[in-house]
Image (cartoon, helix red, strand yellow):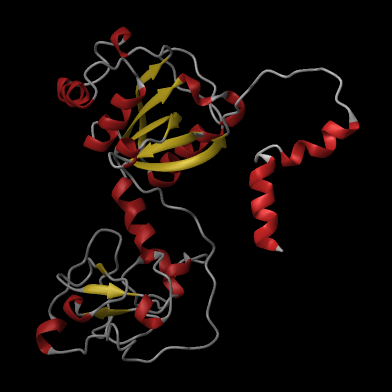
Length: 295
């Protein structure tokens, strides 16, 4: 069994990318037949809103038919008019009918009730990350820390303080880019949950007792708290069991192998013993039968 450096999370972290422009249009205006684009009609034309961060100068045909709808000064998102727009601004996409689309599609926010798809136009959906970052703005990320995170693998901790190190730098970067705040709800130094009677709400501990009535582990309650949404992330080195895997989402940060150590007989071995050691797994009779089958 391997012990994994895991970040137990219930949130998706947006990443930063540099925008690139496409020089060829390798897509059909109607999209892929597996997920055809919607046509502009009177009823669809009126499904529009102006969410925060958008521009009111949206064209009437915005989103209908595969196209670079956000690579324009008339695009509803102001960041697309900047000198360094994100890459989703120069990606092609269209609105689709969710009932007739088998490719990746997601619910949009500019035209109410319509789903969009980059896949049908031959692009990856990086706009979804923008929505994730927007959702984190002004929020507070609740983090629980385990002291067994190992400094050289990601965290340096002292009791009831904010840990430091590469793993924590990830959260600092997310907070900086999205405007979210970091709240360290608890830092566990020991390994016995009875030492921390007030670490988790009663609901979390009740579920922990139902699942593991005789356990005193500090690790499993953290997984349960994350899976239930009482904390957003739990940092530590975890054994990834079947039950934990199905309780919360895990992000693997490192793999710490476990070694089996046995006794070693330091007696002098003859050359003959060295030659026959490879044949020790089977008795001579078994080797004879195998040899006969081969011959």
